[in-house]
Length: 221
Image (cartoon, rainbow, N blue to C red; front, side):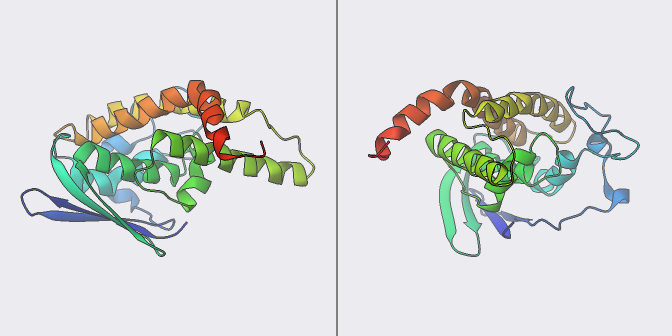
């Protein structure tokens, strides 16, 4: 995954930054109790505490919580996202800015329920709209199915697996929100996760409809 740095400048003039890279690893002794795998563990989590004592996604969220945990969701923030090829800036609310970063952190974590998002993290698009997210999700998934077919496997051209993965992700988002309530003083991070969860809930049921709308951009289809 490309190195990505989110910079936040708040209305009071203060600023904070959070870098995202594949090799980010927290020292075990520094992990707070709310990152323990058994604490509010997702009901569909395949991991075991004996081999994975801490939730990979929760650990991934730690740098974000450290800088955003005391901020209220409705506060304004200027966000600049620096990537190797470009920088993207947006004036938005804390919950929207945090949501963009949180989506990248979740997708680049070692959570088994979010691993299907990892290719999208590799080609991160900050502040993507719902239509852009569906376009990227479907395109990424279908490219993966092409590779499966080329290797002799049975591809899923109907996107059934993609819809099932987003349904499974809803349980992760719900449990993660419970974790974050133990980690933050204000509602910025929690509301950001709720926005992501609403998108995860909508996607399985709107993929077909949205793709029909996107079809107009493909004259030969």
